[in-house]
Length: 208
Image (cartoon, rainbow, N blue to C red; front, side, top):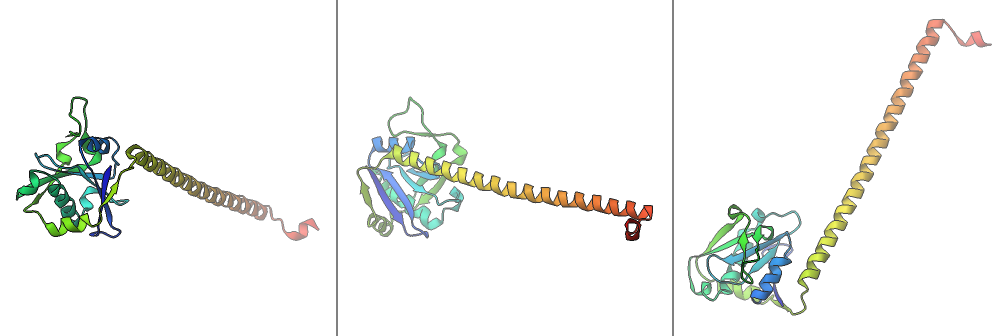
């Protein structure tokens, strides 16, 4: 089961989702999306919360309002963290998550600590948490692997179509260049023939 939320701090609203327990966190780690951003309470146990970036966005494009929505959701779903003030929330791209065989279920590390960002939450904001909870959808049949494979297939199809369009545009440009070169060659030959005719002194009466 995955829990889905929508933040209305962006247009269109941004999907935020999290696993219910460590087993589901493990599935989200394994089958996350490259455009997913992972959130967790720093140095404490908490839910694994993700948001999905819009096409073309980077982690630096997350607005402060959306960032706070995610951070408040993480804090609210941490047994220890929900009771503490001035709490650090860490976040990074899914692709920066590192999982090795000796790690416990739901546990992760990072490929690069430099790619991990932090945001500090002074205290729990019930207004934000309640707003997000009103959008919550419990998806009991969420297919983690299937969703990722579908996403990858759509990306491959889009890349294939973009490549086809690029090659078609290049072919048009080559055809135009070839035509321009052929016209230039014709003009050169015609000009040379006209110059040769003039040098030999021919005119139209010579052939009558």
